[in-house]
Image (cartoon, rainbow, N blue to C red):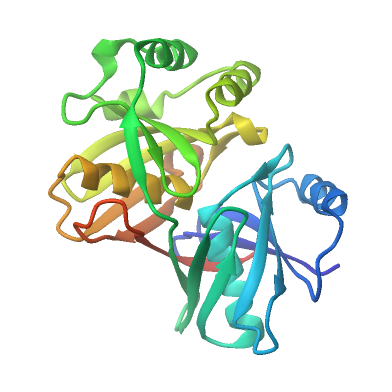
Length: 278
C-alpha cells in the first residue's frame, strides 16, 4: 500500500496539517483503512479509488486514528495534491459518505495547490447547557467571549461548535483535557470545537480542538474553515467574498487557509491551500 504523507495549508516549507493519502485501484476492507489510519497516526488519512475509467471521479473515505469522519478539509487538499501529481492538473469529483464535492489541483512554482468545494453549509444556535459545558471544558467564562459574534453550531460537511474570543491571548492559552474533550465532543456530535479571534473583517486567528479524533489540536482544519465561512455568511458578516484563516501558529505549525464565498446562504464555499510533501 502506497501511503503518501502531505502537509496541507502549509506556508512555503513550514507548517501545514499533515495528512495521509492512499490512492487505491479498488476499495479495501474498512478494517484495513482503520488500522492504516491508526498506524499513520495523523489526524486524518484519506483513502480514494476511481469510479470511472477517465479517473476524474473518485470515492473517498476519511479516517482518524480513532474513528471515521464524514469530511476532512485538509486531507481533501492533500488528496488533491496527490491526484494532481498522479493524474495531472484538473478537477476531480469526490463522492463522500454524505455528499459529492470536488477538488481542483493546480501546479505552481512552489508545488501543487488545491481548492475544494465544500458540502453545503448551515449554522444554528448553541443551547445554554451546551455552551456551559464547552466553556467549562476550556476553563473559560462568558466574559471571555467576543461581542462581535455569537457562539454557534456550524456545519460544512461535519459538525463543529465555534467560540469567538475577545482576546488573542486567551486563544494562545487554549488548554483542555483530551479525555474530557473526547467525551464531550462525542456527546454533542462534534468533530472539532473551534476557538476564533477576529483580527479584522476578513482575517481570523483560530485553533481547533480535535479530541473526537484522538488529537489535542489540528494545525489546519479545512472543514471547520468551510463551516465557519458559512456561519459568517448566515450572520451577514461583511466578508467581501473572501476570508483568510491563520491556524497552527500557537502550536508551531503555521498554516494558511483561503476561503472564497458568495452571499448565497447555504451553498458551498471554496477552500484553498498550498501543500508540501513530507
